[in-house]
Structures are given as C-alpha cells and as structure tokens.
Amino acid sequence: MLTILVPGTELWDESSQEFKTTEDYSLELEHSLVSLSKWESIVEKPFLNNGEKTNEEILFYIKCMTISPGVPSDVYVRLTKDNYNDINNYLNAKMTATWFNDDKQQRNREVITTELIYYWMFSLQIPIECETWHINRLFTLIRVFSVKNTPGRKMSRKDLAAQRTALNEQRLKQLGTSG
Image 1 (cartoon, rainbow, N blue to C red):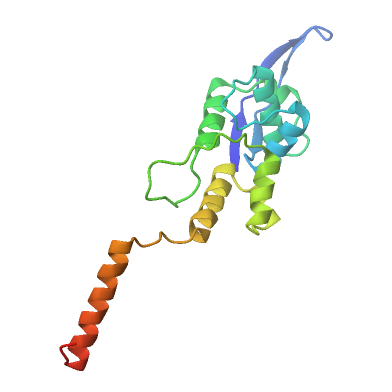
Image 2: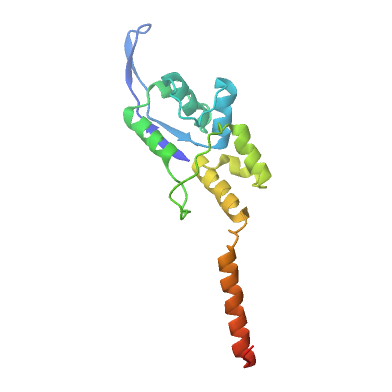
C-alpha cells in the first residue's frame, strides 16, 4: 500500500467572493489485481500492455487504486508532480525479496488481462486473498509456482552413461571385486 499526502490549496470562490483553503489529504493507494480489474472493466482494454495511456486513463487508474473511503473528487485534481512520481515508483517497485537466477525473462506475446491473471491464480491454487497484493509481488508468486512445478531438466545420454559408470565403480569398490 502507498500513502501519499496531497497538499491543500487556496482557491478563489466566485460565489462568495472570498478565498477558500482546502486541507492536505492523505490518500491510500493499492496497485493490485483488484485495481487492475476495476480499471479494465470500465476502460475495456488491458492495463499491463505497453500501449500509451491517456492522462484521463492514468487518473482513472489512480482512482481505481484508491482504498481510502469517501475521497473528494478535487483531491485527484490537486495531485502534484511529486505525487505522480511516488505513484509511478510504487507501480514499478519489485515488492519482494525473491529473485531468479536467470536474467532473461521469457517474453510472452500473449496479452495479459486480469482474467488471465485470475486463471493463473486459480490454476495454481493461489488463494483469492492474494488479489489485493501488489501486482508485482503476485507475479513473482505466480512465477515461483511455475518454476517449482516445472519438472527438472532431463539428463543427456552422455550424463546418464557417466552416472552409471560412476555407480558401477562405487559398487565394485564397496564389494572389493574386479567385476
């Protein structure tokens, strides 16, 4: 979860002919499968693709990420450049201590939608409670399941022959025979 402080402002109110001051607002955000699902259900396009998003789509995703109840609509208009930088850093954060040996991640050309992510979760029997995790942490868990469920590499004929030879030599030594 990310908590950002949206600064208050001083605005001129035409109707009362006086300045009005708004207070700072603490906004809690969560980049999760739930947030992605909300956004995709309205925008009807995948969020995790490399396509550009409009400013309105980005602002709408921030609203979908919001877990603070009853946020006034003017709070989103007051987001600062620093707020956007904090949000962007949060979206790109790894959020896990897990790492993988191979630096080359397989690039799948499949379009990733929330339904596909839910499919992976249910296929791997990952509990539904994980849908509120940071999305990068959830992807890491899915990858861990994938790595752990993949059978080991088969041995080549040469390696199998070398293993049999080593076992035979070990047995000959144990039994004290020459063959």
